[in-house]
Length: 248
Ligand code: 6PG
Image (cartoon, rainbow, N blue to C red; front, side, top):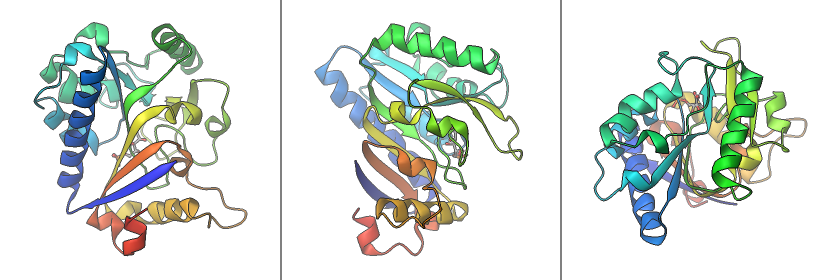
């Protein structure tokens, strides 16, 4: 696992970097093969990034297939839908063909929805699931996708998709989420996180990377994602990082 940390001046700069790095990676992948895959995240941080990505030069969206790392168990037109957010910010403005859009079935009962998406991934990838680009975010508690600390979903390793449960504070608690092993199957994983509210979680991530998670404590779920990771964080979140930390 490699984790590069890029500190940017603002939340807006994080979004711009997420969009620009994604476009660069998609263009490179499109130059190599006919069909490429992009797995989106939910949350608020990516919204301006997806709006910017929709107008990126040189991305042939007819050859880009779009997936999601997690979804709230709501219909696609619900205000909390990750699909709905991406459709508005990216899919419609970019003209991504509907046949390339592989949304999680949020409107199904959770267990059924997980089984349906498991099947959809199997049908598309067979045994070789691989995302050319994967987007992830991080919650203040260190969750990512809908893998929340201390929940059973974190321990699911024999499935690609499982159900998740957000804390009582969440507007929508029932979730669908890719499992940790599946989140590790990406050529490039871009993690976009911003704001002082995530400082503590990020410090726990760095401790986990350094093997310094306190005994009896669990590393944050995001710290358990394997692969080629590039963290895009803002100064508010990274306050107090040493030079060494930034060179991870
Ligand atoms: C979701 C996301 C979730 C998100 C984090 C950060 O469905 O909400 O997949 O993992 O990335 O909660 O969200 P913000 O970008 O809003 O801080």
